[in-house]
Image 1 (cartoon, rainbow over the protein chains, first blue to last red):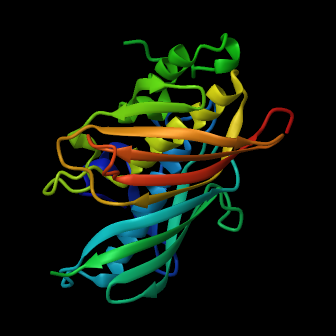
Image 2 (image 1 turned 120 degrees about the vertical axis):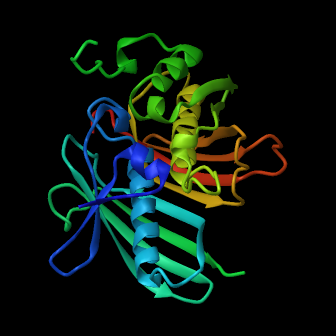
Length: 129
Length: 153
């Protein structure tokens, strides 16, 4: 299990692990400071986690040698189910990795990845000076 | 320190007062973590402030605020705008929210986020909003989304 350098990711308490196929998975504990309406995760905390999984997966795919800086263009989050009192996991799939733009889909789930609580579509820019 | 977790604020327990509601909600849960505050409101809009905070930046070297806290503030501002439009609180869940990140917020500057509810049907509310870091004509983010009313669902 690894933690992140980003101050926001540390504030949120994100950690990561690899699944059986070697894919990066982010984890977030359910805590009072992630809550929105009583008993549920805040949509903003879920979105922040989905975005973090997207950034981390793209950085991972680019590798440490690539000097490109990742900048957000936009994100659309669809909320499918309420996030309850359980560990949330998030995993990103890179749909296309171009020279300037990467398109990703990110899912967050609690019990079963087949039943995500939220799905994000992200467009990220790769800034190369 | 009291080791029982604070009871989540439930607006259903209170009379509708937008300023009180926003203030109470901003002291709870995830809104409190990111430090979002009440700024102003109108008949169908709410404006919040996300004070600059080094613990919420994406990269300590650049000092640029992460996108997550801006998303959270806009989720809260657009949620509030629906209750203001209706004139009462009603439980609702975000169906979807899209955020366009127009440019990075300037390090050190507070971000102001305004959410507006522009259409309500029996079960769905449509919202939009913008965030800026001092000059509303140069927004840092633009949002659009929908919420579903969950009472009786």
